[in-house]
Image 1 (cartoon, rainbow, N blue to C red):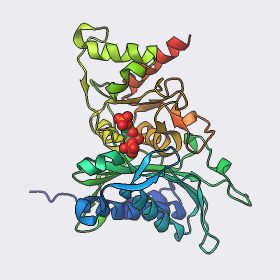
Image 2: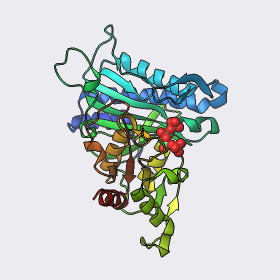
Image 3: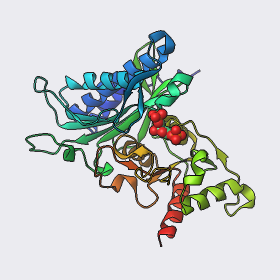
Image 4: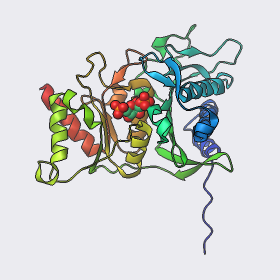
Length: 339
Ligand code: AFP
C-alpha cells in the first residue's frame, strides 16, 4: 500500500512561491499574518454562544448596516495582527468608515490590505458558514501621506486575494496570480494545509445562486435571464437549472469553485442609490481575481469587474461570477439591452 502524500503547509507553499519568483518576502509574510488572523477569527466563530460573541454589537457601519459583535471583533483581530507586521502602509475595511494608516510607532510597509472581516455575518446567529475576504494592493511609490485615492486601484492591480470560509471545516482559498489554491485548517496542528492545488471552475453549469425575493426590483435583462433559467428544459436554454443561495458570498463562491455555478447579485430598483449590494473593493474584486484565476469569469453585466476604475472606497457593484459560459450569457443579455 502506498503512503499517502502529506499535504504541504501554507508556509511552505508560500516559500516555494517566493523561490519561483511569484511573490517577494514581504508579501509572503503579509499573507502569513492575514492567515494567522483568520485562524483567530475561526476560533472565535467556532466558540459560538460559549464565547459570548453572538448577537448585535449595537453599532452600525458606514453603509447603515447593524454590526454583529463578531463583525467588530474580526475587524479588530485583522487590524491588530497587521499593524505591527511591517508589511502594510494601510488597511481599509467594510466595517470602517475610513481607511486606517499604520501608526507612526510601527514599521510601515509597501502594501495596502482591504478586507470584509466577516462576510455573511447575518448567518452567524443561525450557525451557517461565514467568512473573511481580503485583497492586497501595492501602495504607490513615493507618496508622503496615504490618502483614499491610493486605494482606488482597479482589481487588475491586486497582487493577492483570498477568503477564509468558516464552515464545517475552515478553509483558506488563495491566489497570488498563479492559479487559485485551497488550504484546510488542521486544528490540531494549527496550520493551513494545501488540500487542492489549481482549482478549476467548469465552464458550463446547471446551478445558479441569487436572492429570488428581489425579482420584482430587477431590470428587464435580468428578468429575461432568470425566467429562462427557471423555464428549464422546455425553455430557450434547453436544460433544467437548480438553485442554491446561502446568503454568505464566501460559501456560495466556495461551492462554485468546487463544482461550478453562477453567483448573481444584480443591480436593482429597490434603492436607486445602491447600484448592487456587494462592495467592489472588499468583495467583488478579490472574488473576481480568485474566480478568474480558477478559469471562471466575473462581470458587472457590462464589463469585467477587475477593470472597473473605483471611485469610492465603499463603492457597490453588480456581480455575475462563476462558470465562464454562464457568465457570458448573463452579460450578453445585459449588453444587448443597452443596445
Ligand atoms: P451580511 O454580511 O450583511 O450578512 O451580507 C452578506 C452579503 O454581503 C453577501 O455575503 C451575500 O451574498 C449577500 O450579502 C446576501 O444578501 P441578501 O441578504 O440580500 O440575500
